[in-house]
Length: 156
Image (cartoon, rainbow, N blue to C red; front, side):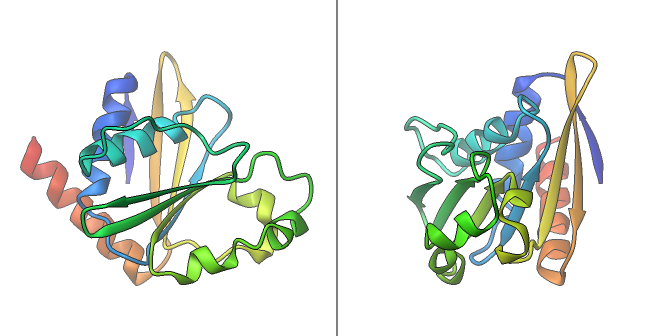
């Protein structure tokens, strides 16, 4: 599924629609260059779940934890890793075994140590906007994408 996102507001809307499709235990990789909208997408998702607080990229903290309604959401950012073993050194495995939704920016920096994704979202800069490609990798990812399509159709 590929979507054009003409502005930041469209990225926030996609995040809010995605939020309605989330279920506990999903692992979602957020990929794209700096400034492609990864954290904006997460912010939209959190807003869609009713979170009104500050949402920032966990570049220095590695993970931000959010408990919202019936979901625990963990937002990771591995941009600062210089080698994949830093993932192990940080002791982050337990977060992926907790049943929380895990949204991971820069998953490639954790190498093969990271839990596999159910859904990949690849964001790219395209003209003055962005493009999002959503790629399901498991049955859970396909189900999430189906719920997302239904959520987007209901709000259109």
